[in-house]
Length: 347
Image (cartoon, rainbow, N blue to C red; front, side):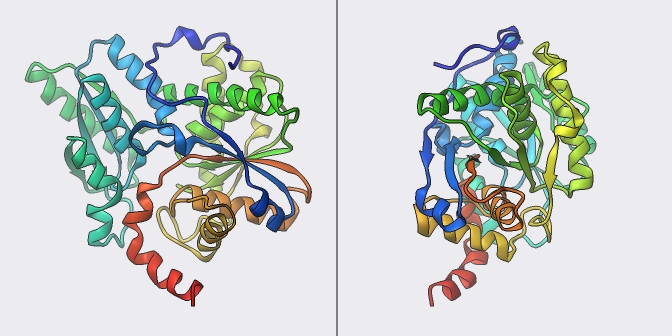
């Protein structure tokens, strides 16, 4: 079992995930890239098709229970994995959930709006609300607060999971814990890693993994691949979140700003939009390992890993850990966009 990290037990937590998740070798994909590749399978966290947000929600919903909340409120993109898992966690704990869906993708089709995570949100009984903006975190949070106030006026006890960076990164503690977990798995096999690669969006997974690794003495680079915003905006976000998380566990000394590594070369044309690098990464992972990646997060993260290897930023022969953060329902929401490319790839 992973060793406990001092400070983590100061925060309420509920157990929602199937952990430890597997650490799987990916020998065929690794050979194609000239590296030794391992995958931390956080797509296998178990709750409602899994994903990285299960680990984060253990802390958010732990706090919600500690406050005796009966209703959870959360905001996210139309195809957000986080809101789907918040709905699932609320179901598991006997709570209601209100989901606010933001318009972040400007070319959304009908399938995007009804399939994938949206279908699961509805199946899980969430009350859905629409929010017209997709790039205004403060306004999205303010809308949630107004809704929470209305529910409180009806006698409910709401708990808001905020999106904005001005609120504590409680969910990031899930990846401080996960970093310890995966290194225990690696040590049991007698090795470590030369590099770690993950998607960098809200920054909680990226920052949590970075702080968690440094807190246990691991010094390998953690390469964050931008999926939500470009590197100039993402780098300070990761820095802020990592500094906050290090302070939350009483280990401020383990984080230094120069440790933040983000790249945005596979990010264009923007959040939730496909590109050839992501197509290639999804195809290679599926054909080499039967490893399914989603178009928004893990597909772009793997595209970033491939770009790092090809550019020599990850050296040939390196042992690399890829953090698979899930998001698989999104594949179905993108079926119409993937089909023309798949038809060409299979011709």
